[in-house]
Length: 584
Image 1 (spheres, one colour):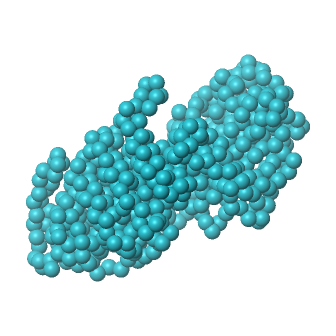
Image 2 (cartoon, rainbow, N blue to C red; image 1 turned 90 degrees about the vertical axis):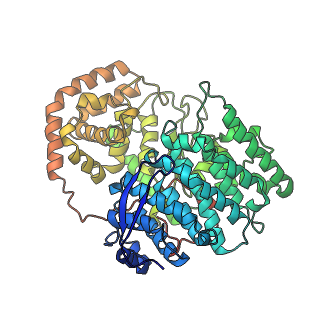
Image 3 (tube, rainbow, N blue to C red; image 1 turned 180 degrees about the horizontal axis):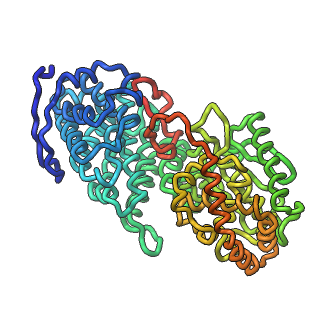
C-alpha cells in the first residue's frame, strides 16, 4: 500500500531531460482518484482534471504498489488527455509523468499485466506525439518494444489482445504525427531510435497471426507504412536507400505469408502497408505478386442515377440516403444557374456530360480504394477531379465519403461544396483546373462555399467576427493562394463572393462570363475595378459582424484523436470501446 504520509521525491536526468523540481506526493489526493468512477474521470466538469492533480498522478506512478491502483491512475491519464486542460501542462509536468512511467514499468507486477501495458501504450501516444516531448521517447520506447514481444507471445485472451492492439497503435500514432513534420524533433527521434526494427521483427514472426486472425500483422504493416513516410525524401523523388529497405523488408514478409495464405495475405499487405505508405495504383500493378486491386463493383456495388447529369457510385448508401443526396445536389444546381445566369449552357469545348460522385463508407475506405481503384492521392478530405474537359469521354468525378463521425446522422462530407466545383468548371470557367494563371482561388472556393451554404454560414462568421480587425482587403482576397491558409481560402473568399453577388450582381455575373469565354484579361481588369468598393465591403463586413449572434452555451473541450489517424478496418472486431477502453 501507499505510505499515508506526505512523500517527497526528487529525480533528475531522464535520458537528457532537464532536472525536475521537488514535488510532494499528497496521498489523500491520490486516494480520491483511485476511488473515482470511470464516469467521473471522463467528465470535462470533473474537479479531478487539473494540472496539479495530473502531476500528482504522474508522480504517484513511481510508488504505486499494485495493479488495481496503477490501472486507475493510468486510466485517469487517458481521461485527462481527452477532457483535461492539456494546454496547461509544461515541461515539468511531462518530466514528472516520464519519471513516474519509467519507475512503474520497472516494477515486477507491470510486466505481468496486459491491462497496464495497454494503458502505457495509450499514454505514450496521447502525450508524447509532438516535437516538444519527443526527447522522452528514448526513455519510454524500450518498454514499448518489450511489451510488443511479450504480448505477441502471450496466450490469446481479451486482455492480452487489447494490450497488443494498443501497443501496435502506439507505434502508428507516433509515426502518423511525426510524418507531418519531417524536420521536427519527433521525426528525428523516431528515425534515430530505429523504431521500425521491432515492428519488422514482429511482422515476420508467427506471432503476428493470432489463432488464424491476422489483425496484428495488418496493424504492424500500417505502422510500417507510416514509418516509411517519416523517412526523408530524395531530391529526385526516387526512393531513398532507407525507404527501399522498408519496402523490400515488408514485401519479403508478405511473400512468405502469401505462400501460406494466398490472396488473404495479399489483401493484408495491400490494406496494411501499401495504401498507408500512399504507394498508389501503379505501384500496386507493378508489384502484383504482393499487392492486389479488387474489382470496382466489389467495392462500389451501388450505381444510382440522380439525373442525366449526375450519378452516384456508393459502398453502402441506402435508398433514403441516396435520395437525400440527389435532392441536395439537384436543388443546388438550380440556385447556381440562377445566381450566375448561365442559361444552363456549358462552356465551349467541355465534353463533361455527367458528374460521377464516388461515395465511400468512411475515410479509411477512401484512403484505401481511392488509391487502388482511381489512382488518386488520398491524404486529404476528398477531392474533385475535373480531368480534361475538352477530351471526348472525359469523366469528372467527386471523391467523397460518409461523415462517419456524426453517425447515426447522415451526410456526405463536402458534398454540396464539391458539386459547385463541377458546376463552376462545366458552366462558368473555360478549360480544366489550372487553365487560368492566377486569381482563381477566391473565386473557386468562395463560390463553392457561397452556393452550398448561402447566407447561413455561422462557422465562417465566427472567424470573421474574431478577426475583423485584421480583415484582408478585396485586393488581397482576389490574390489568395492555397498557401494562404484555410481561413483566407474559404472564409474570407466566401465573404467577398457573397458581397459581390448580393451588392454588385451584374459585375459578378460579368466575371463569370469573362471566364466562360476565356477572356482572362477582362476578368483581371474587372477585378481591379471592383477593388474600388473596398470601403462598402468593409462597412458590410462590420454590419455582418454586428448582426451575428454567436452567443451560445459553451461546450466542454474534448481533445479528440484525429478522425483520420487510424484505419477502421484494422480494428479487431472483438475489441470494443466500452467503459473500460474509452476512446474519442
